[in-house]
Length: 306
Ligand code: PSU
Ligand code: MN
Image (cartoon, rainbow, N blue to C red; front, side, top):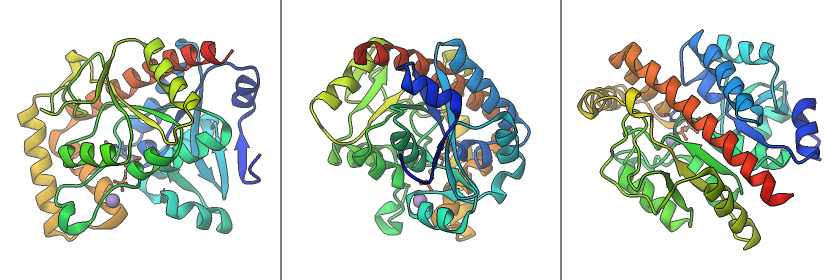
């Protein structure tokens, strides 16, 4: 086992016995939502995974240790410190471990640590992608490269249109990452079910998702798989409302010269402020929805492995 990795005893027992485990990220806690809703949501997401038959493993870096599975106190700590915790992408891991520091894991680093621990399925809200204007800024999330190389299935609600969704799909195609729509052929855009873009495949059941991942592993193909699960209809927001807030947030980020790892947290926080409580409620519901699907998929995956 990796000398920097600590697997929570409950997670380790489940993995050893071939029971389902679902990984969760910690940037969504520290940088994706305000306190205390971030902590409440993280705990509700863990409970939803248990109710659907799997063990949750929230992933983070604490004092230079890579953690697969957090205690409720550790989740509280990440939520309360919020943006004071460093956002940890692939390039940050070695330095955080060498210096014994904390880091909130993004989709990228959650995939890396999940894979080290032997966890195959990961639920989150939205992934990073190709930013609008990337043809001049070169701002492309490391999440896309990670999906190209690390064998973990990421279940999300699509991506927010703070990104260029068309270019994000092109990039994933180039990198050979399968993009699956859960019960839909249209790429969902996080707060809304509609984006106007199509995914590669529609998949209708957790058993089918599990079989797709299992087959990718049997074929020996490297890389992960992206599942896009639309927000439940009743929580979906009007596209015009969300698009107007996103356009304003992007304008402000350009005026203020926001760059690098700050771009995504800036845009997420600004969109949340501009759309108020409604977007936060939708955000919480879509994460719960993804957690339930991930737990059921992990259970199906274990049947194939046994
Ligand atoms: N998009 C969201 N919510 C999030 C993130 C993205 O709708 O919380 C977070 C995830 O942790 C994702 C990261 O991996 O932001 C991407 O950051 P960047 O664009 O800097 O790669
Ligand atoms: Mn970026």
